[in-house]
Image 1 (cartoon, rainbow, N blue to C red):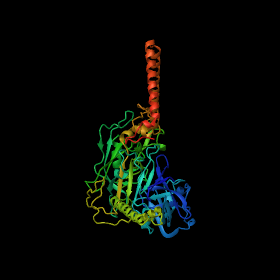
Image 2 (image 1 turned 45 degrees about the horizontal axis):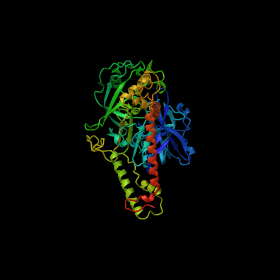
Image 3 (image 1 turned 90 degrees about the vertical axis):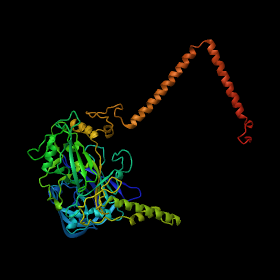
Image 4 (image 1 turned 135 degrees about the vertical axis):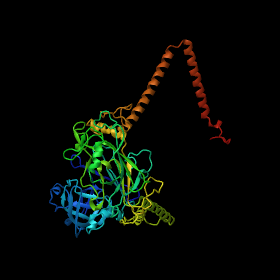
Length: 588
């Protein structure tokens, strides 16, 4: 497992593995260790549910038969069985099993007596050697294990454990199949670097995040749900693309939608009304099987606009979507493109309405095709609150360090002191409580880009977003991958405009890497200097050969005079007694 930790803290980044579960199903996985001794498993990162479950050896359904790893509570000395049963139903699929309390380790964080489900029945889940269960990262109030008599949700455990990250948020950055533009990273209390997000202009990543307040349901905030205020379709900018005949931007929404961020869904799911409006903009309708197909070379250019529900003053975040994320190809890109039909990433679901699980009204599920176009921050507390806690921790540590140094440092090691002080200040993730004023309109407060509403308290969750996709380079990549059927080109060359429709590098630099360009520039400089020196040498030599006897005699006399003058100066320097320093003292 590749992992990076923040300096001087318990926050960390984990590299996720992207697993292709079929022609179009891309899942993002992280490794976990469960029990004593540790049993290693891989779980899907799922922001649409709040519970942790792992397939157990007692699972006899066909999905479990393909799994290479299971969690066996009977083989763990730290496992504590309960009398509670777990059951969850997804949009497609169902899981049930026994609730167990055991040690769970994610990266450096170890949670004792964490409630999870040892699943004995799994249907419609693509389990295999690298997919053994689900890590639910939605809000703790949505936990079915908790509702069924188990303990707190896994996120409460991860941010409440000793040595947990001080800032209770999970950040997700997801790679695009076949592209190396972005890595797949999950951060606990830690953002990727500005370079990993390919942000220009420098500055802290936190300053680039815009936070939105969540839409609450009758039971409170259950999911990371915000308002989708608009969807706009744009004309194609490619001469070689087909079918997209739009000649102007078209707004496709008549009213805002309730949108959920769900990393466990490989599509964008919505109602047939919305899907018909999206595909109708380019003259496409559903197939006989109800699935939306479109030519692989047709770019579907969309911009989604997100906002905070119930507020006219909250930030509005425009998120352009990479057209390759909306036109899904078998195998993740490049194969068979340019001809035939591809599957649209936006599909209609008949029962996606207010009867969703837990009474959480949903109009559109923004799955991985959308989430690959943003860096998402799932904040379990108000970011203003944890920024304040961080400042207090830093100020408290600075005061204590000053006292420690003033007292002579003692015998304690500084690294131990820092760790102990940090553990003393680790915040605990508090459970959400209902409030009567949830629907009070909000207003911005904070000079930072955020939507810290007036109804927000320290434990109010937020969703943070950084848009990543630029329509210009996305169009270039679509033409290379979807129209030409080639692999994704180098991102730096694409951003510089050094890639043509055939995928070849072009431009004055030929699309060469920066290091090669620098080397060639230096080499050319030295070659030029050498040519100038050689030209001067041959010029002087030729001039000397063509000189008259009088000119040659004058040149020899001048050289003799110069040599004599130099020797005379050298003799004077050898006699140090003739010199004095600036104070009139003779130099020895």
